[in-house]
Image: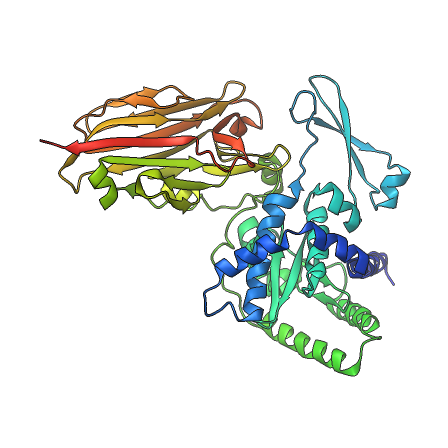
Length: 491
């Protein structure tokens, strides 16, 4: 056996053994206890139509989507660099350290050292490979994310596989009984069933992608690529015959204690999977986007930002309802912690997600800081400027604006700058950043637009130095951004 074959086989063997950690009943119980299952079940029910709620398989798929979103947004944290607890700034990498006995105990043979350039404080980041330890630390990069998420999937009785990409990424696959096939699940991206994400969106030149479970070791490269001939040119480490022999051999070993009927069921499922690989893959919605996890500079260095631009923003123009017409008042508020608008002037109706209420937006996203438990709107990483606006329009009525009252919450750091402006039909007015209930004379206007532009800041985190509607994620009853319009007859 050649040196390359030995290394390849070692990697196959190590990972085929590692996944058995997910089968420990006590560990599964610990993992399940971390999941807010009741809340996720309610959300899954809400996402299903009334006719589909009785479909167990469809409900399980809906629950999987909620599980991915919870894991990314609430449970696990991406780690780029240590943050100084004194200065609250990113620390600099100063190389690798020596693992302690406890590090090695939890599979952390690699330890990254960091130092604060401001105060000189130091920190270390052990790269734990033990899923039980990761339930406690809840941070890392793709290896830690996929390791912990796959465990949680098994704890919830999903048939799950740990997927290793030889070009340095890992994720999970979950079998859908409803669809009768494996679903790609990337917890770092909260992406489900988007297998061409890496090939098309990230621009990765995939070569070997292998899935590992308690029952099998399977080469799934063809699920994640489009041009098989090009991929074959890159698969030069071992021969195709040798790889097939080794994966089949390991799978037979894993299935040796199963009953005949269990092995037959796995064989039938494998036949279906191999048939799927023969079909040409079409790019689906969401598969052409670049990577979102990790520091923008790091992603750029890896060439994984992708070529796509921010999705086109649909314009929302607010017009008065019948209730508002009668009362002569429009009042819209927004909470970043809930990512929700509330229309106070129309029976406290709500609209989810900031995008669904804006007139225009460019290079803006909602950021949640899980460590600090804060949420806010910010400009996209790497963008020199971000802007958004909200529009209220009376053009279809015989009414005119009399006055506006605005609360424009903005938080800045370093030399970050947020410029607020409100414009009517014939003039604009600059508002003080952070203003509360600021009165603006827009008398005679048929419409008005409130806008915010974020710019400046320093260093790699400049994008984070301008924040709109920043608030604690535990603060669920305050809507700091407010646009209130009083209007009446033109007579």
